[in-house]
Image 1 (cartoon, rainbow, N blue to C red):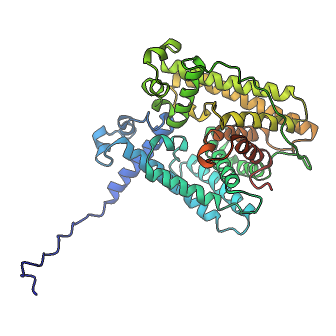
Image 2: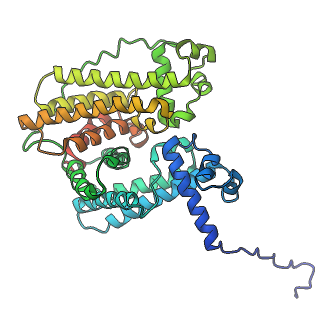
Image 3: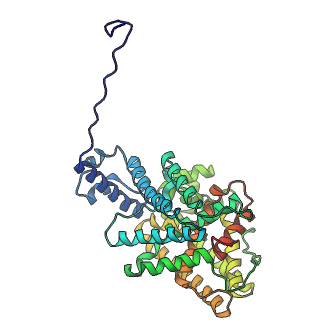
Length: 413
């Protein structure tokens, strides 16, 4: 049979694909880098192609030539940053012991930040909005990163999969939160920061021989109004949406739809969405201060006070009334951001002061209280996402395991 036989089809034409030129790839990389900066400033949903283009003196159509829409651009930005972190985790896996692996990952992470700050690399995308993008390829890339980082820890009989997931989530969250505070340090001090972060995350905060259990705190939240249509009901729903979708994703329509109420009912409690966001932060700050006061009133040494505070707040985070993640501050309008940042800083300073109390009475080992306070803040934030990493786990168990990792370190037995 020959190719002239009508029963045989000629082979399909092969599409000719051109290798992108260096100029094309350089422009594409520049657009992604511009998008990272916009996403870090305004969140995924707050980023616009116009703002991305303006950073490069382009018109929006100049961006669309490379990326069809902002979602496609956001995917590229997230995937590139996750791939960079994945490379660090893979390099850390080459070390022999658990301690060496985790320590290497932390030092590589901070070294990367140092290179970025020195202008020797593009910034990383803040990963707060990964779930807000709701992209399967990005989600899978992050899950693969999570698994690789989890593999840095040893599997032991006394460590359940749920426990390992919690430790991994805390480790990753504490490191990615670094972006929120490391800029206040000199770049030359970054290696010093890496050493101190490593000590806190690996070995925890207790003084020698200080093993404890947290005291139960009554934060008096049970009796608060949570009737349908109440202000507290709105705040909880808005908090959950902002945590999941970011500031721009939590629209008035979506909040009202989640509660099955009219927009008129929304505006009965809130004049604008910004007012609602401020109210959500106010609720979060109020609860944190209430927990701080209750923990200190319960007595005990400094470590017991801190552990009791964390346990109480984490139980709220994994329960029906989570707090607003302070990472949402990166996406709120700039005109209200400064005041909210100041109020968050007050809480971090108080956490540092509580650590000083523990160092003074010997229950907390000598450590850098400013960095430790930031790591504890990161853990409190991260706890609202435990439901994704510990599905089916009882809330009190999730809170206890996570609090243990925060207090005793991710390598604790």
